[in-house]
Structure formats: structure tokens, C-alpha cells
Image (cartoon, rainbow, N blue to C red):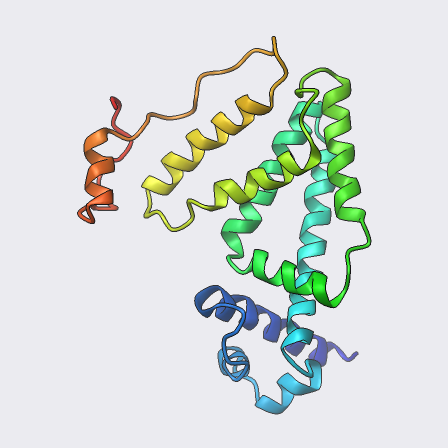
Length: 214
């Protein structure tokens, strides 16, 4: 593929990422060339249909996930590898709101080759061998941890960062083996007043939500 054609393909995938984040993976494909400042014909030269776009985004996910696994493999300890994986995968969910839907559809189109599962299993086995991970933790427990944290993505900032930081530490505590030191939870909890204000629809996202006391 020529360099300019490859650049256009990447522009279309960038546009798909943005449009799907805003409107879901069923958004009209005509929005993609509009967002990329390209012609409609360019879209269909690269992607015959929606499934082709989804597979293109799924390929990007695999590349990013490979980077997370590489970073986890390079971590100093098995526990650091667990944290690196969870933090990296959580960041993917936050950066790419369409991740879950695209991955589910891509698996229907092209079944997994098992590399994802193997990579997570190796991270877990390393932490378990050093005694830092609970013996009864299953790979699926680690896989779903980032998805749980991503459930807070719709909270307004700075509330989102406060809640996610503490919930992350709580999840990690649940994964630690008995006897492994547990550090204090990060950051201050939300006050009851701020939490009530948010649930009542009166929260000011610019207000200080990190005040101590609950």
C-alpha cells in the first residue's frame, strides 16, 4: 500500500475511533470520511463495510495490548506485572469507550487465537509463584478488574479520578496474598455531602471532591 493510502486508512480509523466513542459502533459510516476530511469513496476503498472497520480497530487494540503485556513482562516483580497490566488495560477502556463492543464484535468475526488469554495467565503465574497473589485468583478475575474500574468513566472530573484511584487500590488489596503488606488507600474519600450532591444532580464537577471525611 502506498504511503498516502496508508495514511488515509489510518485517518479513517482515527475518525472511527472518535465517532464510535461519541455515538457507538452503530453510528453511520458516512460520518467517518466527514470526520477525516476524506471522500466517501476513500472509505469504501479501504473498508468494504462496518465489520471491516471494526476489524481494523480490533487490530489496533491487539497492538496496544501487546505493548501492555511487554511492559508487564519487563516489570520488576510479579506483583508489579499485575499492577502494570491492570493499569494499562484500564487506560485502554478510558481512552477507547468502544473497546468492549468492538472486541465482542471482532470475536464473532474472527475467533481469538488465545494469545490474549495466555499472556494474562503468564502474568498471573509469575505473581502467584512469588507469593504476592492469592492462590485462588483466576485469570478472569484479573481480566475483569479493568472493566470494573472503567465503569466509573461517566463520573465528572475530578470525582472520577478520586473514585477510580481508591477503587483501584481496593481491588488490588483483594488480589494480594494473605500476609502481603497492604498500603493505605490512595487519596481521600469523597465526603458524604459531595456524594449526595452528585447523586442528587447538584454536583459541581469543578468543586473540591477530595476533602477528607466521609
